Image (cartoon, rainbow, N blue to C red; front, side, top):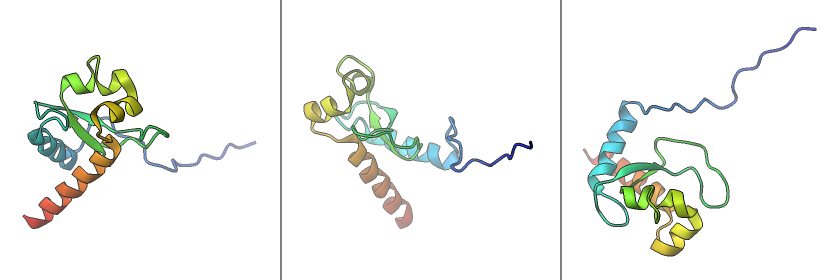
Length: 108
């Protein structure tokens, strides 16, 4: 019996961002951390607190080390506690920032 090979239904996530995505990440870094405005790293938002979203280099928010990976950071306390503690939904914020970036890009 011959096995039929099917292609991927969804393209595989690329671990390294392309040039356009890098430009977006640089723009995000200029904004500063969404909580405290300090120098940020890029947090990829892959969950809205209820279900896992697809990984994307476009669905990101800038977070400093303390709010990203430290004891009071997103990866330590989780989505629901982060929203409760800082009153910022990173899923919504990532969508807002991407829209703002696209509008700014069109104006240039």
